[in-house]
Image 1 (tube, helix red, strand yellow):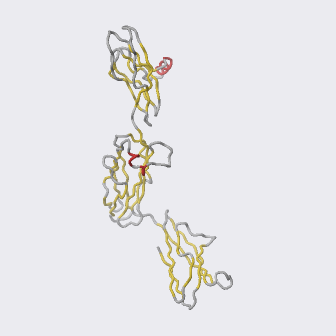
Image 2 (cartoon, rainbow, N blue to C red):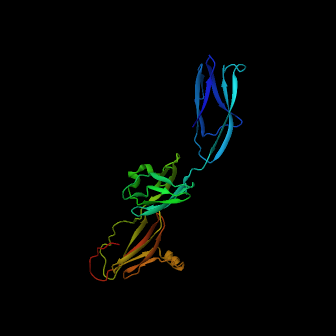
Image 3 (cartoon, rainbow, N blue to C red):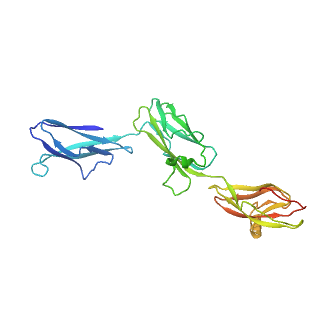
Length: 313
C-alpha cells in the first residue's frame, strides 16, 4: 500500500476526483480510496493506493486528478500523476498448483508429496496452516520446517478416507465436478517473512472396492443326485476402478461359468480366462469387471450324493 499526500494551502475547500486513463487503464489489481471527495481548507488529504498482484509483471500509467469546480470545465484544474508498480515471484512457492491423487479407495492409504521450494539464498521457515489434521484420515508431515536457501522441502500427505469422509467434511466436496465422490482439499503454506501465502490443492475421487451379487441369495430347491440345476447370478462392480474377481474354494458340486456359451467361445479365442471354476469344484480366475460393470454368470448345482447344501460364494 502507498499513500498520495495532497496539501491544500488555500483558504477555501476544493472538490476532487481521481480517474484512470481510458487509453492506458490501471490493472484490476490496483485500487484507491477515496475516489472523490473534498480537500479541506489548510488541510492534508491522503489517498491510499492498494496493489495486490496475481501474476508476475510490471505496469505504468497516469491518472488524472481533477480539482476545483468539477462541474465547470473551464474553471477546474487537472493534474497528471504517474502510477507504476512491479510484481515479483515470492521466495516460497510450490512445485505444482494442484496435485491429482486420482481415484482413492475407502479404507486404503494414499500418499502424496507436496514439494515446497525457496527461491532466495537464505533459509526460510514455513508452516502448513491447512488442511487441519484429521486423525486416521488426513495427516500432513511436517507442518513446520525450514527450507535452506535455493533448497526444497517435501511435505508428505497421508490420506486414508473412510466411507463417510465427505459427509463429515463437506467443505472438501468438489461441487465444480458433477462426479460422485469428487474431493478438493485446499492446502495453505505460509513463510515466516513472506506476506503472500502459498496455495495448492489436492484433488481426486473417492470410491469403494465392493463387489456385490444380485440376488444376494440363491436357492436351488430339491435336485436329484446326478442331475443339475442352474441359476443366474449377476456380479456388480460398485467401484469406479476395474477389479479382478474369481470364485474360489467352491464345493465339488458347484461350478460357475460365464454366460452365454457363444461369448465364452469368443473370449477363449481371444485368450481371456472366462471359466472361473470347472465342474467338480476348485478355484480359478473369471476375469476383470470394468468400473460399475454388471456381468451375469451361471451357477450350476450337481449333487453327487444325497445331502443338503448351504455355502457362500
